[in-house]
Structure formats: C-alpha cells, structure tokens
Length: 260
Length: 309
Image (cartoon, rainbow over all chains, first blue to last red; front, side, top):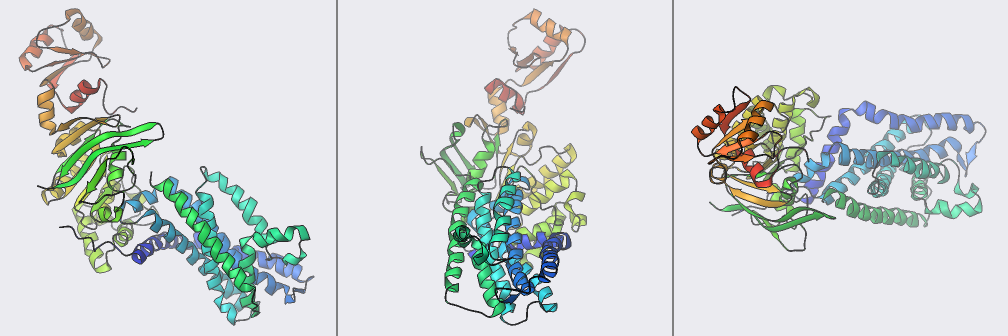
C-alpha cells in the first residue's frame, strides 16, 4: 500500500544538508567570507614581512614560504572550528534550524555528517583562497602545492569533528571562548606553523605531537616543498583516526541532544 | 477508512517528569484529529514521538505505528509521508521565501523539475505568490505561518502534523488558515494538530482527545463531547453585585453552580431556566451563552484551559 522507495538516498540526504548550509552561507558571502580570508593574509604580511627581514630561513625554507604554507591549513582550521562551534550551536539552540530539518526525511546522523562535510568544504575553499594569493605573490611556487586545498578539506573535517564534539558539551555559547583561547590559539603557535616544533623546550615537544594541527601542518609542508618521507603516513593516519573517533562521539552525543 | 496512526499505551518521561502517561488513540485517514490540553499536557511530546523527533520510553512497552511503520526504528519511512509544522516558525532568515522552500524540496529528494511548479502551486494556494522573492523579515506573522505550512506540504504528504498552527495570530489569518486546512482535508489529507483553542478544535477536528498531565481525559467528536458531558447553556457572572446576588440565592434546581473561576459560572440544560435566574440578579453584570469545550475542560479538570502553567 505504501511506497517507500521515494526516500532520498544517503548521498542525496547528505547533499541536501550541505546544500542548505552552502545556500545560507553564500547569501552573505562578503561579510561571512572576507574576514576569515583576510586574517591569515594580515598575519602573513605583519609577521612574515616584518620578522622575515631578520629570519631569512626556517628549517631550510625561506621564512615567508614557511609561514605561508602553515597558514594554508590554519585558515581551514579556523573556518571549520567556527562553523561547528558557534554556527552549530546557533542552529541547534537559537534558530531551531535543526528542528525543521529533523522533521523532514533526514536523520540526526545525516545532519551531523552533512555538517562535517560542509566544514570540510569551507576548509577546502579557504585553503584555496589563501593559496591563490600566496601563489600570485610568488611566495609559494606552483606545483604539488596546488593540491593544498585537499589538505584544507582534510583539516576542515578534522576540526569539524573535534569542534562538534566540544559543542556537544556546551550549554552556553560563551563557553566556546575556552575552546578558542584555551585550545586553538596555543595550537596555532605551538604546532609548527610559526616556528618548528624542534625549537620547543624538550618537555613540551610530546604535547605538540599530540596536537592534531601539527600533523596537517607536516602534510601541507610536504606538498608545498615537494618533500615527501615515510613518516607522513603516520601524520595522515593520525588525522584520519582523530577525525573518525571524535566524529563518532560527536554524532553520538549530539544525537542525544537532538532526539529527546 | 483505515487507520493512519495507531498509538497504544505510550509512555514518555524526562527524568522524574512524566510527559505522556499511558496514552492510546487512533487517527483515521482523511480525518482531522486534535490533541487538546493546557501547556505542559504532553501534546507536543506526543506529536514528536510520532514523527521520530522524540523516542517513547521502552519500559513499559507501548507502540506507535504511522502508516504501519514504527517511527522509533523507521523514522525516514514516516517522515517521507508526513509534513510537520513545528510550534515555532523556524524559517531561514538569510534566505528568501522561494529559497526557504527550495532548500526543503531538496530535503524531500525532489528534483528541480518537480519542485519549481510545486512551489508556485503552494505559494498561490497560501496567497503568498507576491512574496516569492521577499526576505523572511519582511513577512507578517500570518505570512510566516502560512509559509511554514506550505513548506510542510512540498512533497504532498499524506499526513500533516501541526503544533499549535494559529497560536498568536489575528482572527482573520486564523480563519484563512482554517479554510485552507479544511480544503486540504477534503482532498484526502490526514491532519493531526495540537491546540489550546477550543474554537480551533471545533472548527477543524472530527475527533479530539483532551489530555492533561500526560493522560487522556476524554475522546470523541467535539460536538458530542460537549453535548454528552456538559449542560447546553452557561450564565457567566461579571460584576461584584451580581456575584453577591448569586451567592445569596444559593443552590437552585436544574442549575449547576461552578466556582472554579474567580466569578461564578452557572450551567443549565435549559435556556429559560437560566434567563429566569438571571432576572433576579438585577441589571447587567452577566452574560448567557452556549457552552463550549472550554467549559467542558473546566468541568473535567477543575481549572481553566489555555492558561500558562
């Protein structure tokens, strides 16, 4: 009596969530997209041009190039983290956007996975945008570095998973300040973006190794400098495992919040 | 007429709070079924369990079937056949009217060729065609509400679930929405709604279930519930003088005195009896009308319906 074959497929459901976020985001593209795009460039100009005069090379690479390659992934990290903390929380608690979506043929799992994919896309896009500028200004030479947006995508997925997991605990939007200042900011400085981990005091180095950003920074440097070595597989695996594990627990915990 | 929804001995608690307590009912196809009760009665929770937004307690065991599917396990099967209008208008403020509908057509898996004509059709039906490109903040409350209902109908569902469809709207818009819902019902749509407006239940519902504190109090057609359970006429007292007069007169045959309100209410099957009684109260300060669901609810629960609780 009842047809069930018109339920959208899983890819169609994930795409519809992605499409919703894309449409909403691009309505205010300039105000949404310009600041996170300019921020790494301002940092690059301020620190790179200034300090670059005194530091000619870092780890055997011109300093401006060293810094620029790191900023390709931090731009992805920040955009995915903001999307999946403040963005997700607002959709969950203030806009009630999820209430409507969950009343249509979309499960909580679809919704959260779609969210992670969207954050990955933003990671791709911002890495690409920064890459275009640093390539045009000849800071990074075109080559395998053109694959950087894919590392940006991976970075987006990684920080989306971690951020959603954090969001699943948060009751008040102000609590995200702890995550931003207590986790993302130190990671930015101590994960090999601005200076190599080998310059850290010995006791701190293991902590840097635990930080997820460290591993995507190594991956992006390898592509930007065309310098590949076997331990990169470890970095890649670490990123994948962290993404999957945090993604899994984020889905489990957020689902409980969405489906009473 | 076959049953679309079967709810049998369903329980739902949030910690120590019991939201739904051993509730059972059946909704027939092409019917309008209303869940009626004060705030906090468990109406919304019950509806959420039907479309999979909330899960019923697993102990004690109860069952919910919508179109033969268990929403706890087969939520997608239920959702593709249902449209939901939540209590709050959760439209995307960044998108215009058309885009709001377009996004949802994707959720329902509709292609562009399917969604474009359907969107136009619904905008025409709900008298929103001129607002197609408008921003959400430019819409009135009534327009927003109609848009949310249109959004729930995009995929031509067999069941429409409405949580307080006209709360907070002016009478004109309310009547317009009622008229549209009646038309949809005529076309075969099954409607499940919650309300705390007696008039809304009377206007739309074939069957109503009155609930309070998670429990079913009474179920039946609005007309028969009123006819069978409450006297036909009410004499409402409004002034201090009339109140004093009523208290002085005391009990009278064939008239039931209800003192739950601040002012006394007097009920009788016979209009003339009430009119005769009213003449003893002096000039003004009272009002005679037909009894309604509100009076019934008051009788059943001993308190007013619709008050914030």
